[in-house]
Length: 405
Image (cartoon, rainbow, N blue to C red; front, side, top):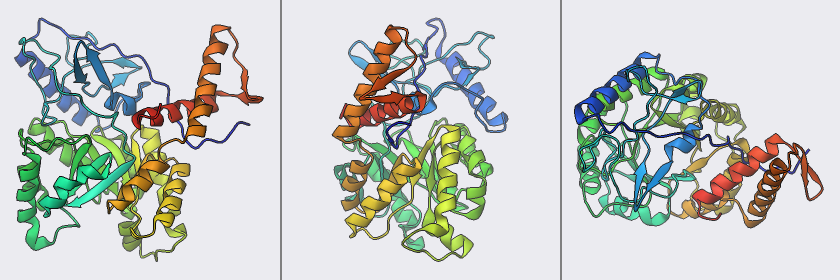
């Protein structure tokens, strides 16, 4: 067939974002509240949609000199909608507060819909997901300098039980600092169980710069639902990065990925091996099935798939091999536990010059073929079919996120 390029994507669909200038703040509040309840009641699953949610999540809308972050959109039969809107499909594009993802917001003119905010980021790629201990404010402040796409302040495994309260205070201090506004996604990994409430009491604060929450040891849909209910009741729309690191979590990966709050599945091989009594090997065959299953579930639900950590942070060659293998499996990114791992991971998930050149040639040839009314075309003597076009589009998407296109 064609040249093998281990990246794929769905074509982006056009979405019309509209707003009703006659509606007031109360109406927007009621609409969004009804929307949240509606999502929770639909078995916590997203409706069938032809819209690429991964791209909508990162979509920004230009309007004059400002930029606006699009509120998440779900659809039925490909039509954007807001429930309880008089039967008329309408989409309110609501900007996130510059310091938090609390919704709704009101623009300076008093009408619903848009609020000017600062540039909302780099395309929101999640090539590298870097952890920083929640009880080390010095390391948390340095985390953005690693170049990671996502930085995770860890309140779970990286913090000893006796230091949990100290860690919560440290995370709050850093995230509430107006000077802390990195060009990266900012996430907090909370504890599961009784400590979850204490974590959320700290992080659900308007003054914090927080973009997402990571939930450990997610074993099923109910774990995500509880987190979503807690954040929604507090008036926040925080995407969930769900860690799948148990036998139950792997077997329920599809329902976890389909939860309305889930924005990524994160595979945890070390905890999974401990859960099932497996012995970790260099080859990783003992967790290969689970590793593939998680990425399949994420792809089917159209959410990101983040690969497990590579524990030997001094072995750059081994990390590179593992990351490239994760890429061939279809993963979108990989977790990092040390700053030295970030560049290796980012490089592996960024298309090289040769791959970008191939993608440009394929997409240019496709456009020419469409203009000429031809359905079949060749690039460098190679027949190009739909899967290769999709791969080329994914290369373009990754390259743009890395500012290489």
